[in-house]
Each structure stands twice: as structure tokens, then as C-alpha cells.
Amino acid sequence: MNENLKVHRQSHHTVSMCGEVAIVGAQYETAAFLFIRNYSGTWEEAEKLSGSLIGMTASDKFGYYVGISGSYAIISADAEDGGDGDPITNTGTVCIYEP
Image (cartoon, rainbow, N blue to C red):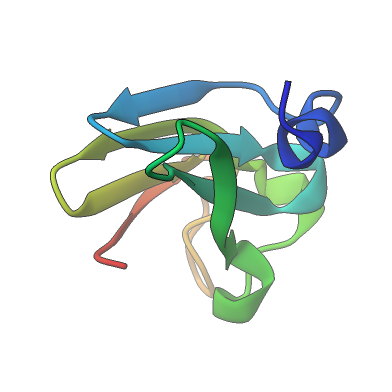
């Protein structure tokens, strides 16, 4: 197993693949990680998509579920609140990235 994948194996919840790209959700790190399989077949970490950069906290569960389709990475934050003035808590949200 690639060392980069070993580092994240304890923190991931879901994994999704599309072609030579994989996304690993890491809700306890408030992040998701993109991996690309290189020409020799080895998986390399390409990018960390951090929920904290968009105001997510650990309690939002950013990275709980992930998906990838073509050039889009989809990451859920299952317990994200609706924001100021929203009376309903833990409604969740989905973030879509085009890396």
C-alpha cells in the first residue's frame, strides 16, 4: 500500500474512484484527499481539499461521504448547520469542487 494512503487509513470514512483518480474522505481531519495513479501504477496524493478553508469545523463532519465524477469532487458535510438564523441544526451540505 502506498505510504500516503496508509497515513489516511485511520481517518477515512469513504472512498470513491473514477478512472485514475480517487478521493478519500477524512472527516476527522475536516478534509478530503485526492490521489492520482501515476504512469507506474503508484497512487500519489495530489491535493488536500480542506473544509476549514470554507468555514467547516470538525463537528460539521466534512468528508463523511465523498464522490468523484469526471473532473468533479463531491464532499458532504453531514452535520453542517444552515448558518446564522437557521433554526434547524445538522441539516448538512454538499460541496462540489472542480480541482
